[in-house]
Amino acid sequence: MSSRLLEDLTKPMQQMATIHKQLCKQQRVELLIYCTLRGNDEQNELYAMGRTAKGQIVTNARAGYSAHNPDANGKARAYDCVPMLGGKPMWDDKHPAWRIVVACGEEAGLVASARWSGKLREQEHFQDPEWRKP
Image 1 (tube, rainbow, N blue to C red):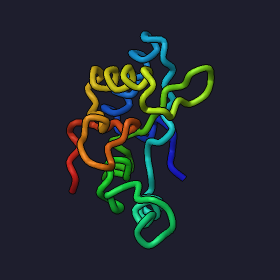
Image 2 (image 1 turned 180 degrees about the vertical axis):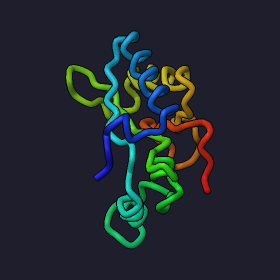
Image 3 (image 1 turned 90 degrees about the horizontal axis):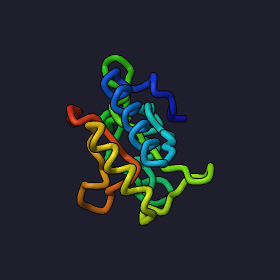
Image 4 (image 1 turned 135 degrees about the vertical axis):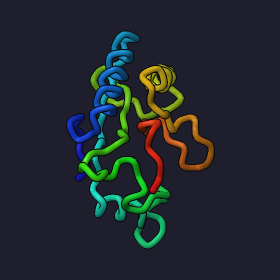
């Protein structure tokens, strides 16, 4: 199971995540970071979805090709998050809270995958701008 711990992120990512949360809070949006580090086995299971396993395709990244996967120091360079409204996650990406989450993440220095094009664009994924696929 993937981690939710900020300690499982690289130091620069921990700092950006903390700033992201603070900026959201200033806008009255609580941010829940629900996935930081994801092991390679779990990544391959996600990759198999919609290909060799039941479900829809949710990622184009095999193990080692996701910023969630451990780097040489065992740390992740990405996280997934969701705004919390009234103590409940707001998954509807058309809700105005998501605009705040994306803008605050970018202000914190993160790459927001909400800006990517293509069918796997995600509102919830933020990563280190320095991360490059191997």
